[in-house]
Structures are given as C-alpha cells and as structure tokens.
Image (cartoon, rainbow, N blue to C red; front, side, top):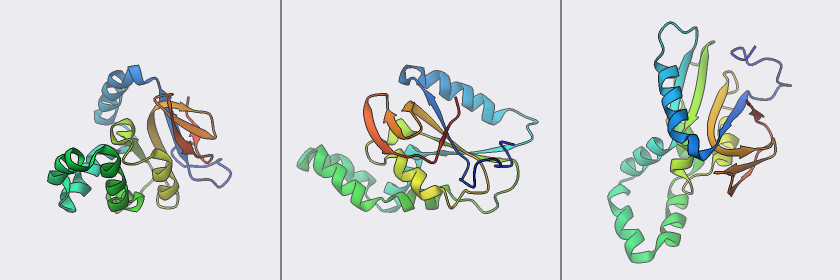
Length: 167
C-alpha cells in the first residue's frame, strides 16, 4: 500500500519521519545502510537539501562570495539575499528525475543542514504535484503534529497539513 501510494484520500503520499535532533547521526547511519542494502523491491532516491543548495550556489556562481557577503553585510542581509536568489522551485528542479516508477521512494534529507536558507514546508508545497505518483519521505529533525513543523523541536518551520507523520 505504501509503495503504490494508495489509500491517501487523493493526497500526495508525503510522509514526515520525525526524530530527536540528538539522534541525527544515528538516523543518518541507519538510512545510509538502508539505501545501500541490496535486493530490495524498491529504489530510494535520496535528495539532500544541503547538497542541492550548495550545487545551486555553485551554478549561480555565488558560493565563493557567501563568506565575504556575510562578513561585510551581516547574516541577516546574507539570508535575505540567498532566499531571493534561490527559490523552492530551484530545489525541485534538482530533485526531479526522468522516470518515476513503481517502487521508487523519494527520501528528502538535509532539512536541518539547509535551514534557514530553505524551509521544509516550502519544499513540500512545491513537490506535491511533481512526485504525486511515488511516496515521499522527509527525514525531519524535530516535531510534526499533522499541522505544524517545528525544526529541532524549537523553531517554527511553517504550517503544512498534507503530510502524514510516519511514526
């Protein structure tokens, strides 16, 4: 049922796997082993938001200037500039792949690493129509109550009501 993305009231199969921030290294290790396990009937496509962020910065030729901008203008100005230069749609373009097929699972990682440059609810809002035919699992270091995301169980990360808490 999970792989076929059925029984979800016509909603995209977006799931949030919440865990305590102190368990970050344990969760990373577990999923790295899980992704590389041989003989599975499914294929996990991992999208690390932080790696995508760095790649976008490189492509826009702004990565090398980030340190100097923060030093000269401060972190608040840097954050605003990066959020204007890199949109959620840019992330989604990097997450797309050619052929979604039965057995694919999109695994979104790096949520905590990319904060505050990109917010997880923005990503979820923008992927639901792109990945509506496969399940999506976002590893989330924090809390999700079915309505609100709380990164590190400390920062309000926005409202999102279309996901299912997998635990």
